[in-house]
Image (cartoon, rainbow, N blue to C red):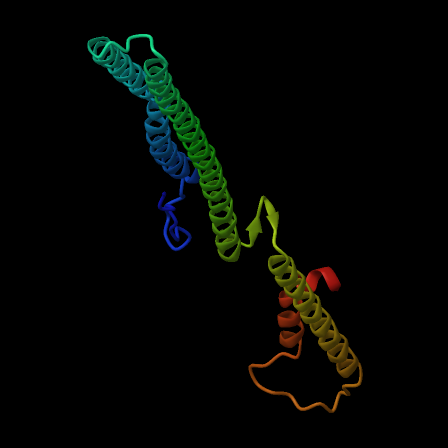
Length: 224
């Protein structure tokens, strides 16, 4: 009976208020089922009066028939005779059968309405549970979409973000180690340089060391 208010909000800056959206959907569903339930309750309330009216009509018809039989038998001189009593008994039996049939019909009608009411209540409970389940699913999907964008799910870093941070840390450490190895190799090379090393105008051999130290966040004075 309800349309689920699903949407993809992770692609924009709008944060969905799922509680408000689904509360509105639940309200619509409950109103629809309440309207149907009110109709069934009204039909149930009307049953006793409807069938009592038919019973009264059957009794009135039987009384009129009995009066007619009495008049007819009296005119024939058969009033209170055996045949007259038989006619009256038959008339009373017809009345009683009619009333019994009406009683059974009323019972069956009441049971049918009661079954319909129980079925309606069950359908409403199923619809409400379905909407609430869809709300939970949408909230989880939205949180997962945000987690894919921010790397945070329920206030904690996702495994992907943690792995990325670990990889970055490993890469940074590897780079530091590579720079340290280069510095070590440079120092070893300088230690092997002799006085016969040719002089190059505008170039100092310490320039390379300074660049390596700067990459490591150090200064040449700190290592002097």
